[in-house]
Image 1 (cartoon, rainbow, N blue to C red):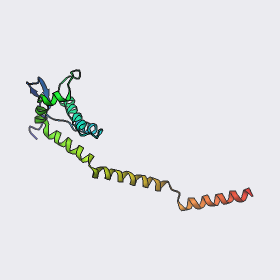
Image 2: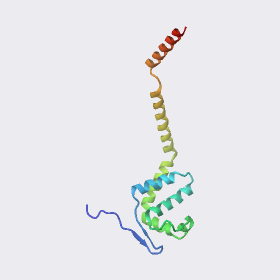
Image 3: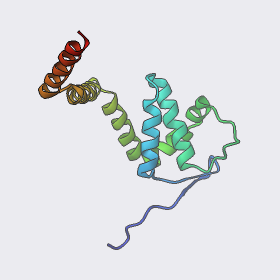
Image 4: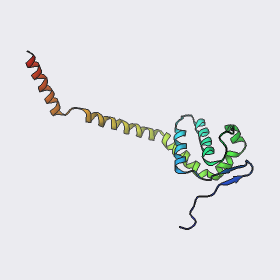
Length: 143
């Protein structure tokens, strides 16, 4: 297939940074995992913003940036414009994983697995008969 390649970095002169206009699947998974680590919706957005900055920009780790400045300066809007489809996907995944239906389904799966393990651990009828015979024999030998 001709012309199929990852896009090159985009330079944002206003902020003097380069943006990689895509997120790899692994980067997306990591951001989703971090976002799901908190129940607070505002904290989730902060995690998204800083996760994307770390993954997609050449902003040095030692530069102090705060969330409010990133948003108010328009930097986030510029980044969102370049990778909005990836961000939409991430947000949809977080909504899906956070939904009551998904949580209930996972809970039911875990309960079902636990019941199956418990069932497997229960003694069979023949084991119970064998145990009862052994106890009766020990009781008779002890008299």
